[in-house]
Length: 546
RNA sequence: UGGGGUGUAGCCAAGCGGUAAGGCAACAGACUUUGACUCUGUCAUCUCACUGGUUCGAUCCCAGUCACCCCAGCCA
Image (tube, rainbow, N blue to C red; front, side):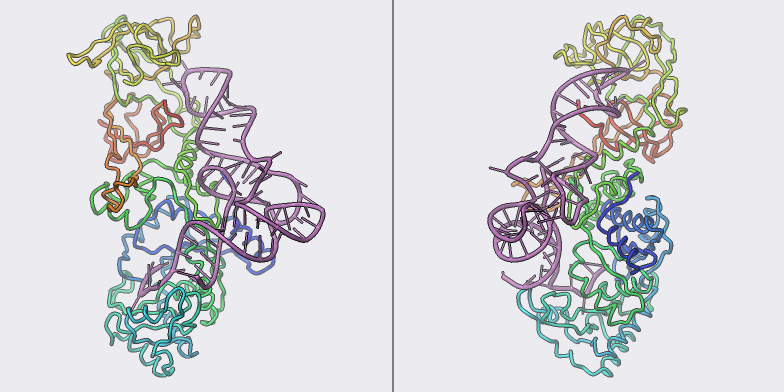
């Protein structure tokens, strides 16, 4: 558990010490038009942890100022995701609940001569705005009288105009080097029903106008957002000041989180789902929180990952294996360690009685001792991992089974391989071994050392299982694929299914139980599992490959 | 070419005038009922993008240069 420590915390500390604020209040302000992903987790976790660190609190506020694409289904999904991460918002607010107040503040600005209704259409506004290097020019409507602006704005609200016919603009400076200050649009006409307001409004405030007011209304002290809003801060402060908001919030920016081999763009994620390339937003290959959850990540691992990788004003790209590391760390003492064979090879123990099964005590070092103890079956017919057997030992470093060699079966006996049965194509079908009854696990036998230790399952009691190995959805960015669409460049083989077996003790496994199958990685049971056939998703690979 | 932001190891990231924390990754070794885990060690000194300057002393202050990111939605 890492203590939060970053530059924002330093700012907060100072604000508290120097008496600028009494209570730290932050907010997490998603637009309800998408599922939260690991990038959002950085914002959620920092918003909540920073406020918590100072005994303050955090609100969840849906930034629902644009009814297009926004919907109630996302609202619940986002609430669920935040709770899953382990946070409880002090309040759940909606930006749209402040539409009346936002409207009144706009009128105040009009009365102060700081806002005007513009007749220019979208293209004209763009043209008048100028460019990065040339100043813009004033709209012909810029000097309308207060009375006329008031009347026109009322008419906009009353629905007298169609979409795009008029806008309300802040009167700031068309020559500002900061383009955001060149008379930004405050309200646009949108004859679109709102997910909470229904048809009550046909004018909707823009983010730049609504957001600072929302923060001010809620008493937010530190409004944290990503770096691309840095350019908007002067505008944020302008609106708070000119609208005469009694509480003055401040905006601070940090760099977004990127992870290698992880696609986070909203647009791309939508393409993957809509195109049927993945199961849905909770497909384990998706970087969404629901996807990561189904893949088997834990909220604690995500939280530690976010806190430990820190925060700065750099747009960083963190290696994906750093996330894996925090998951391993988290699961190390919590995941049970049963045995599973992903790619089975049949083994016959020639000197073991037909029909007999015995049980061996297996124990793992775990936080929960009970979970670490179980009985596992041993008998005449077993499965081992295909990759754990090779006919001829390639070199002295080979620590698994080969003909003439002896290995320990984990928690059970030494076995020696005597012969191999092949089909007409030369593929190995089964191998024949003998076991040494002297060598049972726990007996203290140490007269000789095995070549190595491998895992197995007893064939007649094992449960069939499917193992889903999800590879990241990476896109191919070679020369040949340049110019192709995102989907065309997508690696198509991102799901490998293996049909194998797990030991019988897993029969009562619940969805999202975590397991570390020895040498094959970390898995969690999928929500689709049944008692007869378990499905496991791989959460992260084991640290090293073999 | 206007404005803003940022440059510390392969990747994150502390340090903010007193001589470069930490994590991940990597490598070497020990241990091991799996090669995992654990443990030990190594990993920025013509060093903090570069070049000058101030200073007894600079990653930190100043000047200039370079590189990368953001801004010309009636998106957020």
